[in-house]
Amino acid sequence: MPKKILCFLVIVLAATITLNAQQKVIPLYSTAAPGSENWNWEEGINENNSWKTQVVYNVSKPSLTVYTPDASVANGTAVVICPGGGFVALAMGNEGYDVAKWLVKKGITCFVLKYRLAHVPTNDPVQFFNDAVHGADKEKQKQQMAAVPLCIADGRAAIAYLRAHAKDLNINPNRIGIMGFSAGGTITASSVFNYTPENKPDFAAAIYAYFPKMMQGTVSDDAPPMFIAVAANDPLNLQSNSVDLFTAWNTAKKEVELHVFNQGGHGFGMRVQHLTSDGWIENFAGWLATKGLLTK
Image 1 (cartoon, rainbow, N blue to C red):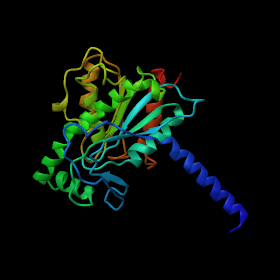
Image 2: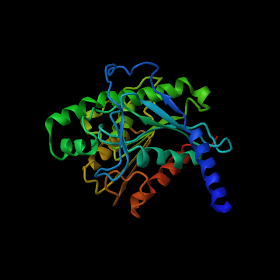
Image 3: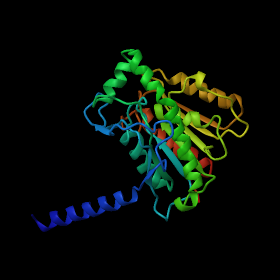
Image 4: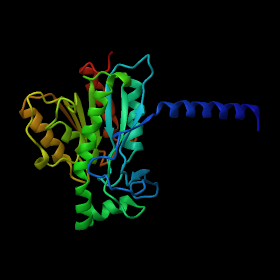
């Protein structure tokens, strides 16, 4: 092997090891997760599905994968990132790790949440989702929806964990936010209602969230500021969910910003589609900057 190629490979390997070393994984609960103590199935990964992305499924042990910014840019702001996947899978790359890799460059400490999911008895969770949602399989819908309270509980627990361990994590306990996509948006939107001082988010970002109006609670007097984004051509018709959430915040005179992109579909996440939705994360960073959350 030529020396130049060997040298290049060594550099790439070293960079990969360094990157992975920064990605600490923290168990969300010190014991079995409350409400699913008897879950014993094995977590799986699927890369061959109609979503054309790698997904994780059958999660029974929630965790947080940490992305720590360089000390020169770290600003103390932290965010829990909740990937979507219809409560049966998690698009950990496009709506998780890729988001963290982008935000960590802005000085934000990112925690990608792997939350509990409905049990899928096959190795294709995306087909399970399609059967439930598009095929109207009532039994699968029932299993899917039964997992929702546990997903929401994991989101609240993640915020509480960061606040309780803020000093050890080098983050500001008053600058802890949460953001989520689709089903992860359900977790995010739920967290801004009925919170406690321990699990209240200081800011939230709901991206094409599944959050029907019936899930809304009462907007509290100290409700956190919220960023909302969705595509006008979302094939799951979740546009109204975002508009209703915006309306609730706006009517209560709370800080909120809504972006409805002409194109983007559903699940755009960090995909580059050369559509208007590609700029959502730049919009989000600009919004964070106006809140002073990108400065130390």
